[in-house]
Image (cartoon, rainbow, N blue to C red; front, side, top):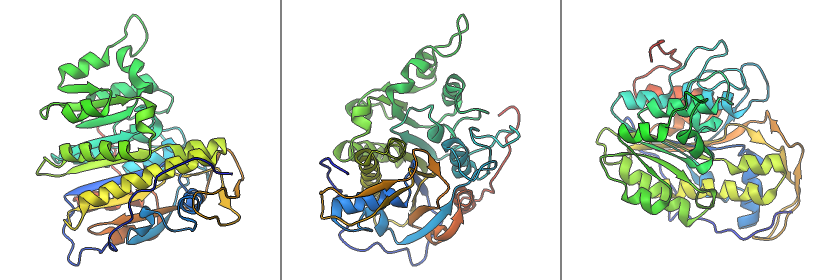
Length: 368
């Protein structure tokens, strides 16, 4: 049974139309709902709207399905699938931005930075979590939290936002007596650390930002996430060369693992608010590509009867783990048509990179 009180984002005023004569996107935004498979969409849409396919995400004009298997398993973990989504390469479960044989891969976010674009990685997970870290880190095991945060210190991205779970690792990174205070190192390198939305909004324009927010701020599904994304967009859009942004909603995965419909709905609804806010930004400007997908499905979720809005419904979870099910892809903006149909997760960053004149995957040089 799903229970709880949630607020849906405002519906779209009119159907979204693809650009008639698309130009190379100035900005690319990738939204990843961790564990957000078709069942999570159905549960959330039924609970909020009394019918399926009523979420804002599902009104993006291009739709498809994405395969998520990893290099060594039919059922991926977030590290391998995140690496596929960021670097365009299948790898073994557990790898962070590395090939199966432990070669460093360059993510589309790194290429964007090299092109002079601004880059943001935003998650409600900890910044050393698998999905956000694959965009800036290169480690052979997802559990190497200290090494992952050390990679964050040198990535040069403009905005890094996650929950407060990484705070102590920034402050005391590594093993005594060789511990580093990465917080002070990054402040010296031009970063401002913030711990709430007001501080983020007031951060100096000439400083990069690391946000370490309490979960109570980040896992909300309505006004707080809308404010967070709008503030990030305002900073990023000041760059005339454009930006790349990855935004993760991690709670659909938590709901699947815990077989908890309320958490599944909260996480999926948070993703829907993110997409609604991004649509308000992209509007009809024609220069921003938005793609939303999942790294994998979690929980094997299905619904066995429809429900009136905001009432209990019957939900079946078939596992507390990940599954190999195909996950939805929705897209809007210039060349979004390339992301429709039946695709593979590695196709997503490869197609994005190609729009910017880059071919993925790319093995990094040893000194990078």
